Length: 261
Image (cartoon, rainbow, N blue to C red):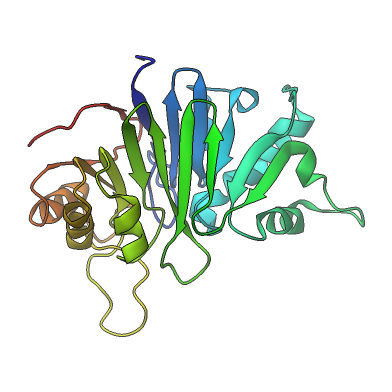
């Protein structure tokens, strides 16, 4: 891959459980020698290893603690500490408040707490959190998903990718995505709820968020079981004039120039 570009590789995007040919949410974002595993949903550790070993990752970033976005951290823990890998240092892990204790609660099998921090150097996210990982700059914003949840903007050398995580349409996501080259936005809901809190985008919402933000390109992901990818792309395209793609598992997108439809 070209080192000067920002690359997004889709490891999986299924919801709320993996299908035979599509793991749950997980992405590899890379530029040059910098590689970040973004969300670690069920089944994504396998395809991740087609591109990078766990001990070659520069960081892991987790949007929220629903299993379809973080469950493979559990098996990654065993791989990092008890298999054929030898970490030079714990893998930097950025995630919602309480992520270390949630992992320990599942992994601890004796009176002694499992050594989560030996595998992961945990940093808890907050609204507006910023950090540099290798050549990449990450800015996280809190979004609306009914539990602590975050979106992230990843930038390098004037190129930008924004990932929504799971969220209803909200001002913080639109602000984060302002002028981005690519918005990777969930489109889980076939329709907005008639009653109760909205916690996901519909495809139309994804198109509207991209349009309001002035994104160069929209990639719909995390498409729900009651929609086809083709339906999601068509419905999002009705609200957004730029190029709209689907985050097909295994696909890689190179981010560097705006694409017109």
